[in-house]
Length: 294
Image: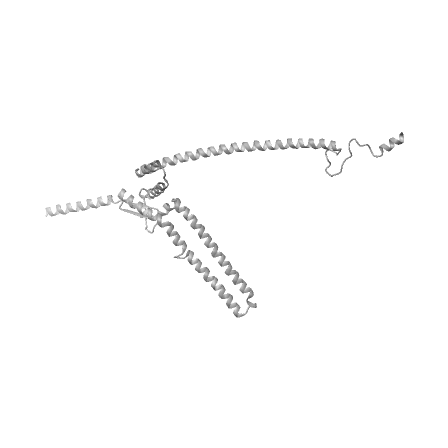
């Protein structure tokens, strides 16, 4: 009896140990697909282009609807002047236009429309890439489960330390950098980054961001100084141009005055267009008076 109790206790203890080890050993991670997509430049650029198409499609639908509304209004105003046959013909034309608009709308925004298809085509390559990267991370980091936070899976709590979205995003960016790398040095630097752990890579990224912020601040200071120099230079140039214009005006007035004296015209000219007599002209009747005196 005592031996059976010891055996039962040993089996129970062994089972509890295995259970605790299994519970401690399970690693669960998650990603946020929406966050990843928002930070992939290619997806953002393609999404902007798709948004432009959507706006054009909406404008086309609004235009078609405006044409239909105008046809209905015209028919209402002219109904009393039309025969039954013409009324039926107009109504059929309106119905055809409405059917065409509905078909166009379904073709663009319906469940199987261009918007759904193109959005799927836009997301699918990135989703495939994320899936492959998640597989690699799961095998390298010994994760047992990795969920998508933005999917329909209900997650009542998710510790931030289990979020591997940044790792996935960095891997995607590295793939793009590999494609853009042309020199052996660039490829070697990318390979060195791949060999870093998550913590080391985050530290390197933080240092790079700090260097980039300093570079941006330095460039801003240089731009501000350049703008200040340009402003001072522009003010001096404006002052010089104004002074030069005044000197040219004075010089021209002197030339005009000399020319006026030579031509015997009054200077300065009167604004009302009347001319004053020349300064060397005699008063009217002066010569006759002098002749009489003589």
